[in-house]
Length: 196
Image (cartoon, rainbow, N blue to C red; front, side, top):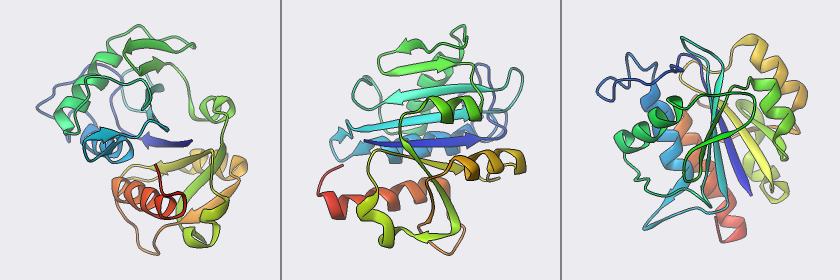
């Protein structure tokens, strides 16, 4: 199993305008691209992948969205379609327990530490100064990859992740976009396993 947690520092926590993903929705476009790269392959979806989105923007942070590749239906790889599914999830009353908003999509009111404590996978923090993924890839299975949006992780959030991380791993010495990092992770792990 592979899982990805993307922290959206400004991503709004209420239904948003699908015509303003990059602005008024707090860079929801970036999160949608991450979902697409994490889940979609040519003519299909990776069934053994889960995507967690942690939304920290106004008006009711934090909120978490979980998308399970094994269950999700009616999702296409374009930003607008994915954004519509996220918007629908944000219209659901969110409490501490996961509530299903559509097949394979769940929403809850959870913060970073709570999410990391409940997700049953080893934590890998993706950061430029980490160990080269090619050195540790054979050991990487049943993991949650944590990465930030265009801002990265805030200082307090980074402390939490570093404290709980099994490994800090790099896919490049350069600062890449989050969705690019996800593609590289899949590539490196697919080379070893031969599957998603």
